[in-house]
Image (cartoon, rainbow, N blue to C red; front, side, top):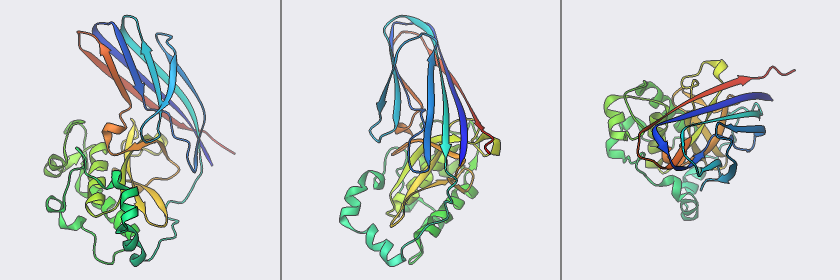
Amino acid sequence: MALFDIIYQTSNYYTKPVREAVFELMVLPENMHGQKCQSFHIQNSLDTNSQLASSFYGARLIRFRIPRKFCSFQVTVKMTIEKDDLNPFHVNELMPEAQEEMLHNHIFKIDNHWYLSSGEFTAAVKEILPKKTYRIPGEDLFNYMQRVNNWVFSNISYQTGVTTTLTKLDDILRIKAGVCQDQAHLFIAIMRANGIPSRYVSGYLNQGKSFTGSSAMHAWAEAFLPGVGWIGFDPSNNLLANVHYIKIGHGLDYADCMPIKGVLVARGNGFTEYSVKVTEQQTQ
């Protein structure tokens, strides 16, 4: 078992007073198998009350409604997370024939239709994907997922400043660079183009391990392995999600997992800064 202390801070500044606003933060880690949020504490600079809610896909949300004028708004969330040290490679995989049967089952497709459909950031068909990303007939799925994870890691360089939150897959494939969000979107698109349910994950990384993308909030993907369930893949580091990955929530793509959203009544411009600090506790 491992314990992590996480501090998430965001500061929002505006050139003219905001008259009224509603903010929604998706920063609280999920309670799930192998992970438990032991405690959390929320502070904000305007001493406004917060409410907890849930996203469409079950992630926990923090909501603020501010009915008065302000020019800046800061939020600090402190959390303690307990993680079990589970081996992500320890899977009891079905035979390839049984995997194929499940993937082509109509009920399975209906149950997972959200994670098989292409969206704005995952619209890729096999015609625009390199042939090396195709699944080889008879190839077991777990091996295929790892192969694609490695392919994205090897062919899409992690590089900040070359993409935005609106960058599409064809641009990522053209410039062969991006950040964790882009690499996760490409992995998801490849899985879905090959008939495998996949979803976008937002979370934190243990900064003490110096992973790529650990200095900020991180994104990776989960793919569904028939007979096993959802398995996390991080193409930014060519790793499977393990004890050092702290999941906040999942969705179809980045649009479902934005860390902060807001609706403001204002005339001026604004900008947001945030920081993340993840510290692993020394346990006996």
